[in-house]
Each structure stands twice: as C-alpha cells, then as structure tokens.
Figure 1 (cartoon, rainbow, N blue to C red):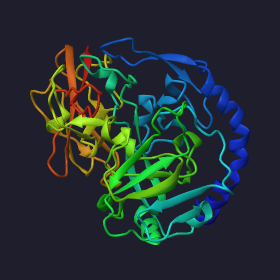
Figure 2: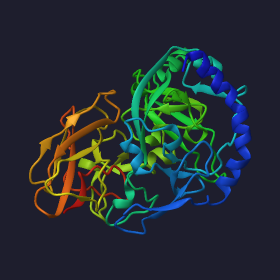
Figure 3: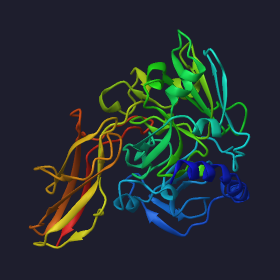
Figure 4: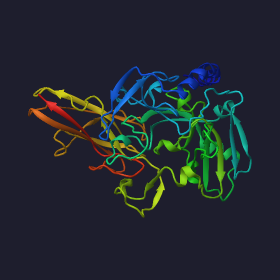
Amino acid sequence: MSDTSLIRDALSRRNLLRQAGAAGLATFAAPAWAQSMIDLGLPGGPGEREITTAFPQKGAMVLQRARPPLLETPFEVFDKGVFTPNDRFFVRWHWSAIPTSIDVDTYRINVHGHVDKPLSLSLKELMAMPRIEYAAVNQCSGNSRGFFQPRVAGGEWGNGGMGNARWTGVRLKDVLDRAGVKAGAVQVRFNGLDDPPVKESPDFMKSLAIDHARDGEVMIAFAMNGQPLPLLNGFPVRVIVPGWYATYWMKMLNDVEVLDSPDTNFWMKTAYTIPDTPHANMKPGQTGLSMVPINRMVPRSFITNVKAGETLPAGKPASVRGIAFGGDTGVKRVDLSVDGGKTWHATRLGKDEGKWSFRRWETRFTPKAKGGAVLMVRCTSTTGEVQPTEANWNPAGFMRNVIESTPITVA
C-alpha cells in the first residue's frame, strides 16, 4: 500500500469504526458467542475455550475473556507464515473502558513534561514525519501462563498470546526531538485512550528510560502488515518497543510525557515486575527477592505443524517445521531433538526478516522405533542465549521460555 493510500485509508476509517461502535460496545459488555471449542491442554485445567468471531475486525480467535478483551491467536495460524494476519493478531487490554470509535480529525498525541516545546500532534502531522519500518514480535508478558505449575493467577494463556507483524511508523526519537527534551530527563511515560472503570483504579501507563526511548528503534506505529491498525490492536497509533514485552507497547497512544524523576506509578512499581534472578525464576512462597520491571524478551521456539498426541508413520520421512525468535535479538540456530532431548540436530532456517521477527525453521526425520516419542525444539539467539531445559516460575506467570516438548506416537 502506498503512503498516500495508507493515509487516506486510515483517515477514512472513522466511519467504519463508528459503525462498529455499537457492535463493539455490545461485545465488550457481554460474553461473545462461541462458534466452536478448543482445548489448550493446560496442565492445571480447565483448558477448554470458546472460538469466537464476534469481535470487530477479528476473525476466529480463542476467547480468554470478553471484557476487557483478551483474545488469543489460534496456534495453527503460526504455521501459515512468519507474519500474523491482522485479523488473527492477539488482543490484550487491561481496562474495559475502551473507545469503540476514534474521530481521527480531532485525535491528538500530546507531548509534554520536561520538554522545551509541548506538542499536540494530529494524525496527519504524525504521518507526514519521516517513517521507519521493521518486523517485530509482540508478545504478552504472560504468554503461556496457563502452563505454569504450580498454577498462578491471571489470564490463562496458551502459547498464542503473541504475534509478529511488519510495523510502519515514525521514530519516537523524532517526536521527542521536535519537542526538545530538557537536560535532566530520566524517563518517557506513555498513556492511551482506555480508562479504568472506576476512578480509584490506576490508569494504565508505562515508561521507558530516556536513552531507550531515544535510541531510534522505539516507534509510534500507525500500520501493521501494510494496513492501518485494527481498533483492538491500538488504532490509530501504538508504541512499538522491539525486543521488549507487550506491556510497553501502549495502544491508542494519546499522551507522551517526559519525566525528570523515576516513574513510580502502579504499573511500573508494583505490576509487571519480575524477580531479579536468572530466567526471572523463584520458588513458590519464596520472599525477600529484589523485584524489577519486566523488560526484554528471551528466546523461544515452537513446532507448528505437528500437534501433541499426533501419530507419525514408522519408516516414512516426516517434515517438522515451526517458528523461533531470539527475544531482543536475532535467531542464530534452531535445533530439534526427536528422542526427548538426548540428541539434537540443527534445522534449516528460513528467510531472516530482521532480528526482532519470527523466523521459520524446518527439517526432516524418519521415525523408526514404534511407540511413544517426544519432539523438542530449542532456539539459540545471536548473542548465544539458549532456551532453558527447565521451566521458570514466578507468581505473575511471566517470561516462560522453556524448551517446548511435543509428545507423539510412532506407529
């Protein structure tokens, strides 16, 4: 899509969003109707979830929660390519008061705080600035939380609380430079158009260190996969923090504040914190650990074309493929084990779409001995970080990246 048509499409979508507003309100207010059911195989159970198409601009999604929306990407979607379609991209909101329509003519991003010149940018002004584009994985901090044992509180995601897109937007640095960041600035805080249901609840805001915010990589995006953002994925613009968990990727961004002292709001000081330990790991009931805000992602890899419990014929070559990402850096290699981790062999990597993107891997093997077998896949990042053999645990259910196992039957 050309720049001109992208802008025209984005600015004309206010009519679409107004039309979707009534349906959206109804969807947020009541449980969506199921088309079918899926079992996510969560060890703590129950793993059954509805598959719904009731949400605006979304195809079939796993319904984790209706209000505020928590929609998981069905895992088979990840076998179709490294870029997750916009209408199947996962959704996660913290508060239920979400705008169901956006008037792009009056929409503004306010830039203020410890700056020389406060700004009020329209969407047209933002989209007229020099732009950048890159691929990056957007992953919920609690993706795969449903597999934690002992079980923890929170949305019981399977492995579909993630997606990969090619994002288009402008550098946050360029916006900050236009406002003029004053000496002594320490953080940049983001806020969006969603609101708490009651005024006593803490407004959802997130902050980045000033050097990170100005590194030229953090983006204010208005398009994903060549199209304007879907409403539920943050239309008209959202923050993109490549290599970091989705909690920082503020949706429906309307406020950028430069701070001259550390941000102590609830969502930075209390929520979204992890133990300052290797793999954010601790023992259930353990106390006295230093806690820090969650930050960079870690390597992960998945088999996408073979499901747990599937039967493969003995003596016949089988193709195994999947996706991997290096966390906050690229994928160096992906290894597969067909004997439960006793031996490993390198797979063939697909096209490199950039260091923050999913990367396809594929290999073939011939199952021999009949009976049970376990396939395992392991990613090594370009910085040498390898997925762990044992799952981490923390009370928030964050940052799971244990080597995935897929039990099969050879017959």
